[in-house]
Figure (cartoon, rainbow, N blue to C red):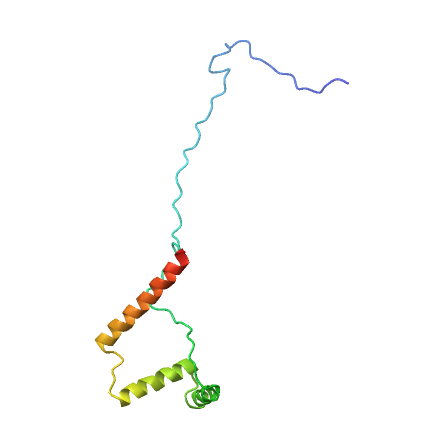
Length: 125
């Protein structure tokens, strides 16, 4: 079987290196850098600057705790932590104790920062 190749025609009237023999190459288009899309949330979630809520254990009579739960549900329809916060504020008010005293705030902040440093030191080990 004969191969079915297309015949090649060579222009003999022009030189091998003439401009007519060599097809012109078009210049490659210049690629422009695309503008990056503006990120809606650059770098992920920002670091939290306020103290976060902690779970703590309080030792108390379980029946008394159940009573606190029932009272908080009946009166305020709030969580037990909110109920206890209101109770402590009322107690401090009755006994002329200021929860917003500068000295108390400084001491509480120092204790909180010390506890955070201890946690970070444990993670590094």
